[in-house]
Length: 385
Image (tube, rainbow, N blue to C red; front, side):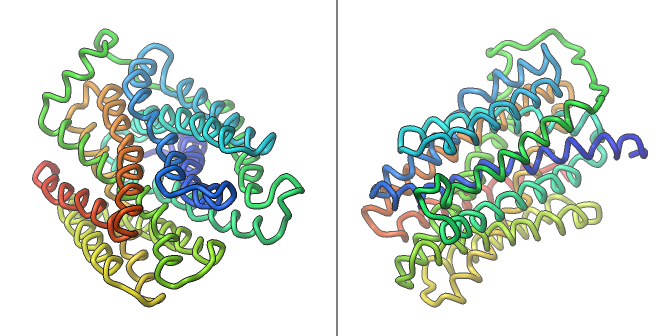
């Protein structure tokens, strides 16, 4: 990658930080649950409303990129994200939060679909896996900052001031506006699709390609585990240690801290290690983390489990995306749309986990995540070194 490409990549990678804003829904759902006295199933509607829209907008976004270009599509997503972050600052009710997280989900669905191919336009396929992994590192920084800001706001401000834990929306709003302006001022040369614009039928037909179908399901499982740990970890600490939500919120930050560490180190490791080998290591860490989380009772043991889950889940998304779009190079926009559609697993998993935890305690939620890990293990055969 030449010097000019590296400079162009800076504002593009900044967008990965904005991508991490969607992960604030994990800690937010816990605060909303407490504020409005909701049960787990109802509170988990919030993460579901974020990730439901990936099912609706993934494929249309892939088609939209063929018409207006990748950069303009990313700009649209940033604008929607800014509006979503503004709403909770204008009013606070369960209905407003549902609308805000719906818009956040729509913006994030468009962003994740269009940003990965935009990175490919700048870097090419050779360094795509490591670059996307570094992007996930930046995303993870935003993810673990969210709970910290929420905890700080909950103790620093009073609800009548209009912010309390919601001060994180104000801070992220400013960053989102800055990212929009920075990308808007950057000139990017995009590769044009050689084929005619794809239809919905053409996109769904790609699911007939085994690697695309298996990658699609793997994304569902990965995101389900990610959102599951994000929302469940604080509840497990509250259930087993008898601590308050403000104290338990650190569990979410801990998860994303280790996701950040995993993404940063993974970006370097993937330049030296085969993707298949790295994927095996990630699955082993996930499996150990879930077992410890299921049976652990002490604070330190539970923290170790959450850290292992963060490390294990930190690079799986980038590996799956890179594996899918490099194996179908002439349909990168469409494949990216299909892969991002799989993020609706963030809707399915929390809903199932909510019902299971209401019935069996948080152990029920852990078992649901374990099913996702088992499928990821079978996906190993589809990874091209």
